[in-house]
Length: 161
Image 1: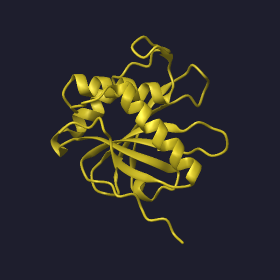
Image 2: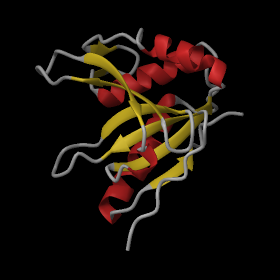
Image 3: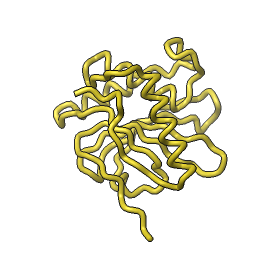
Image 4: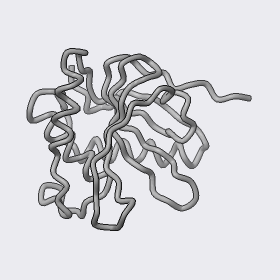
């Protein structure tokens, strides 16, 4: 039995939770779709050492079919005219090793929280719940999906119209 692709909407901003396998925690990324199957991901990685974080972005062509994605949590709609500006803004999210705002060391999840704060603060998205609430919502759904071997694409309760 094949698992159907995630049902993603075009021009939507999603928090993606990705199962890296084994006992690894879920990886957190942002994804801006241009079509239901293609878009661009935005994330940080520390491939060269625990304190050597780098911002990365890449075009994705079949994100809806990527079986490692256990959750796509929709948090906003971004018109095509703002796609480039959003990418430019995300590149400016600080890579400080400690987030005073969220009181945690930098990791992919904390970077996504900082990015959401900046995007909400500057009007790219309009959140109606706190970023901590959205993080908890994503974490709970992602862990549940991973434990059940399922995937889902859902609208966040923090998504504002």
